Image (cartoon, rainbow, N blue to C red; front, side, top):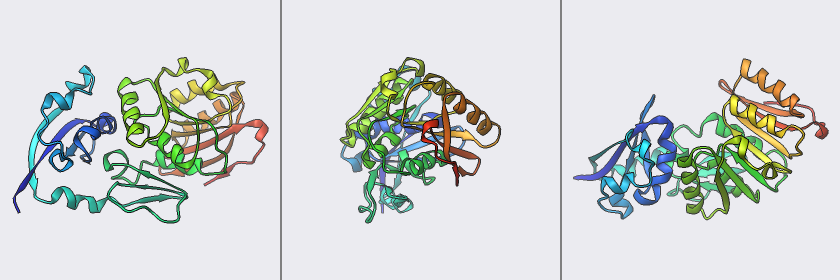
Amino acid sequence: MGADPAVRITLPTAWAEIVGALLYERLGPFQELGEGERRHLIFYPFRHGAGFVEDEEILAPLPEELRALISIERVLVPGGWEDSWKIHFKPIVIRRLAVRPPWESPVPHVEAELVLTPGLAFGTGLHPTTRGILLLLQDGEARGPLVDVGTGSGILALAAHALGFAPIRALDNDPVAVEAARANAANHSAPIEVQCYELEDAPLEWFRGATLLANITLEPVSGLLKRLKGLEIRRLLVAGILSGEQESLLEGRAREAGLTIASRLYEHEWVAFDLRPHSCGAGEKRE
């Protein structure tokens, strides 16, 4: 069956999702391989219609400091292989929300769909922290404004848009993540405002009356809770917290900020929280 050219980009795992989002429009869908500290992104630009793309064009959207951490190789793969790997990526249904790759048919009987290339959402069925936020986001019918704190490539903001939240704002302190989130929102025609802010500099008016998403670690969540003390919000959905000691610390810091735990979800070592103002008065639910 011959062989077809592909582009293999090897880079630190922490940057894989963001770099994939930045290069998606130029190089097309990709496969993400590897574990540990390094990942391989396999692109098929000829199948995407881009043809041969010079290294300089691939690196152009990336900041200078990141380019030094990336290696680019041209590899040959068996003809048709770039299509056969797609069988491993099937739609994921999370209550009323479906997440599917672009080549799969729409999922029936769901409220909303998110169409994402595999490197951005598939391979592990979404990370447990992402799933936790998506599950909690569907509890209740409240819509209205939403802010995604530490948006990364913007996956949670896109899901919120698909579920009907508006307006949606997103922030991240990493300029590369901001550009990736903007590109991903544009690819989905989603009117999401994405800005580069340190958490302490984000405008407080963004948070007032909004649902907040924070799939980030304990330290930045703690900083966010300090900023929210005395501020009226709708709810704060938090993931990225380990059960046990971090969980206990989060409980105490939430109380200090005037928030109570409406529910929490456990998956493996991770716990996700639905935090609401004390005035809501709902008892806690654990799952």
